[in-house]
Amino acid sequence: MRSGGFGCPWQRRLCRRGPGGEVCGRAGRGLGRLRGLPWGRSPAASKDFINTFLRCFQRHGTLNLSSRKEVGVVEAGAAYQEAVASGRYARPTGLLGKDDNVRVYWEDRVTAYFITPVLEEVVADRKRRGRGLRILDLGCGSGDGYELLARLPASRVSWEDCRPALLRPGTLDCYLGIDLNEELLAEGRATYGIPGKVEFARANFCEVLPSGPGGSGFDLYFTSYGTLSHCNDAELEQLLVNVAAQASPGAIVVADWLGRYSYEWQSLWTHEVEKVPTMDYVMSYLDPEAERENQQYTSFPLRLMSRPEVTRVIEQAEKRSHARLRVLSFFDRSVFIGRHMETRQYNPYAVPLRRAANCCWNRGYGLISRP
Image 1 (cartoon, rainbow, N blue to C red):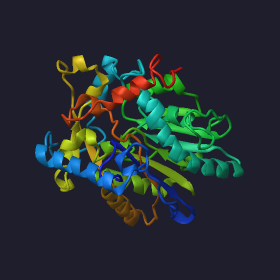
Image 2 (image 1 turned 120 degrees about the vertical axis):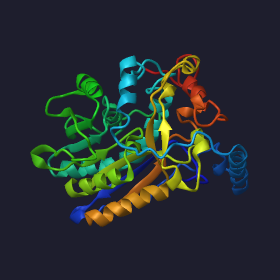
Image 3 (image 1 turned 30 degrees about the vertical axis):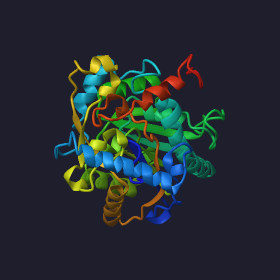
């Protein structure tokens, strides 16, 4: 990751598969020059800032280290089932829950900023071929990824600029979302389902990938909100091998993990990554602060990833698939504003910046009002 080796909770990779099995791309762009952050000012300021965090890390040591529990896509089922059954996984307001203002107006728009130009090219290419875009959403849940993609602008624009959506009627050939949770899939079908166009199915994407229309591959293999952190390295390698074997020429892969060096879990920072490959994650951020102390949460292991770790997985997949996988972009979307900044679950010194940002977008506070 960038920004002095630490950053935000989510990090993504975009890869493209070109003709003849080659995945070709451009150099990545980062968020390290955001105004107001120390590394966007001067080398001296950046050094002082990083040293402060390093001293803090040395002083307080390591807390809440994850056990070496093996991570896998099935492990989190009980926790998600618990959240869905309680109603805490729904989308009640912009101040709390999974669909808060920061996710809608910050994280999703940063994601859109990076993937829109790449998808523009693919959509245009498929249009020349006389068909629409074919999308496979891995770990789709209740359709959050589809909603994000449906809101993508037609071109890279400012946050408040309104343009026609990239996936307009006629540009989408098919969308297939796969997940293991039947309740979430049922919600996705009820909300977004269009027979033959937008569909949801139960499948484990670490085992076998479903085919597109007529046995074809897909143009976009999409993951969102840390989906791939449910996979261990062997599963990640196999997934990329399967994608390389199936994908259409020029296909894009959007891969989303939890970033290892996020400040919200500073207690897990280490250079010996093999000793702490995962964290024991809980979704305590879904509840108000007053309710967290008396709430029992089911934890599950999530894979923490840094740039070198992601690179190693891609290199292994290249060797096995005999395809060249090249990164188009490597970016962060939640600098110092991840969900567990509020809970202090993994860093008792975290400042609740996400709450403050959520208020800025809420009705009566300032920036804009949610529809």
